[in-house]
Length: 117
Length: 115
Image 1 (cartoon, rainbow over the protein chains, first blue to last red):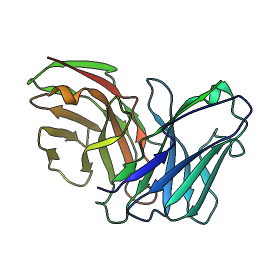
Image 2 (cartoon, chains in turn green, brown; image 1 turned 30 degrees about the vertical axis):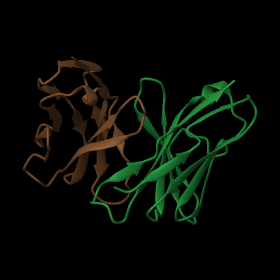
Image 3 (tube, rainbow over the protein chains, first blue to last red; image 1 turned 90 degrees about the vertical axis):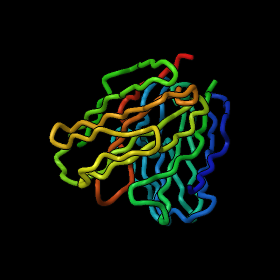
Image 4 (cartoon, chains in turn purple, blue; image 1 turned 120 degrees about the vertical axis):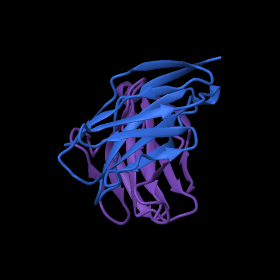
């Protein structure tokens, strides 16, 4: 199957600083990627849809100025958590659809554990 | 908006036995996709099985099969001959037929496999 790589897998940052998380499609081009957030022992909640070459579409309640998304190429989308606070600590997961994949399937990155101290 | 409900927060099964995980969903659409994803301790999401709503035949992937009841909006996962490596969080997910590939997930079921 298609490979989606997310980096870093873990990051600890100080409150008030910004953190960038990368999501790369390694063997396919992804015009659309998705960013999810997963709280401990909870489900994945869609944060935003990242579209190559255009602005991301954010879900209701997600602050677009806090969670900056840039999809500058067909293989890379980045999520930047700006002015991070402890409540932003969570597990962030990206996914992308491979054009060559069976209809309906999306591939996920390994996830990033963000801890804000 | 679509919703996905998994009513079993935790389940356990004896190794080599069979277990069924429940999922119900709510939608006004007639065509859509349903998925079961596995999330092991590594947190990597792994697709277990998919079902297209227009297909009446239940999907099967080796030891994994589903019971898809469209009228009842039910989509349960059956794991046969359970193995220790099956222990994980299992998420049921819904995707609309057309448009975006974003998924709506249930809250998940934690499956433990007892040796």
